[in-house]
View 1 (cartoon, rainbow, N blue to C red):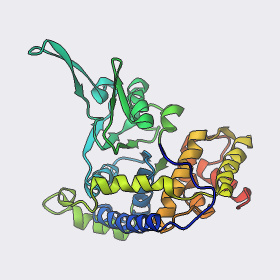
View 2 (spheres, helix red, strand yellow):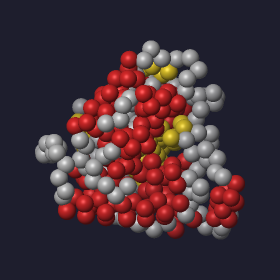
View 3 (tube, rainbow, N blue to C red):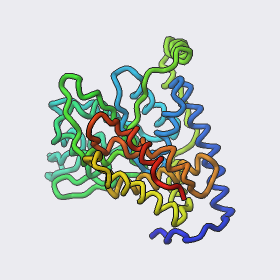
Length: 324
């Protein structure tokens, strides 16, 4: 059981040492992934922050922008098992979770785990599968467990999901329900690289061997689990917690927010703010940590009326809420 967070900030040498080690390793992973994904350091950082906060990431973009390569490079850099599921309209839930198979030798049913049993799962083109199949990820993303025919199987940590999503105007896509969107800590877009970075990308990927195959781990799985274990120890003052709630309530009170952020969204924003503070070498959260990632954490969970774009709407709310 985790201890209750401290009410007053107090310097902690052991915590500070863990934050310093995290920052060094974090920058090493970003640099390693950037060998493959050119010109997208900010996206790499944000995906890593969400993963450090035990969160999942939705990458919404057109095909061919490097989403799959990013997931593979991250898995290789943190020395985690990687599996990919290509979501299609005929995919079934048991194709993801696994199923019980009758063993003729033992005369009994045995559970055959599906591809979801991994450390880093790439759910490729998630919105091409039916809502029934999409829902197979709800339990494992929220609770880290998979239940098949009444038996619950716990995932080996870490379990992280990176999903890719085609724009909804593409043929053969299904809208993700609100419950599914709320499971993702961040929604990000890769976008197109700057021209110079795209030239570098051609130099890298026109080589004989795929460069991602030669990527070596920067940290081991145990190091990454230590990152995640350090996040709850990062101090958030009482005023900081009130700032998070006031931001959420400001959005909820605005008539343009047809689907405002849930309490889970506020919790995810707090955790990613803690991870962001760690990436800056601090063991305490400031309002600037919240402001740096608020739009990426909140916007995809919201429906905003009129011509307002959710990202811009969140930034407008950030400007209105007094900073403690």
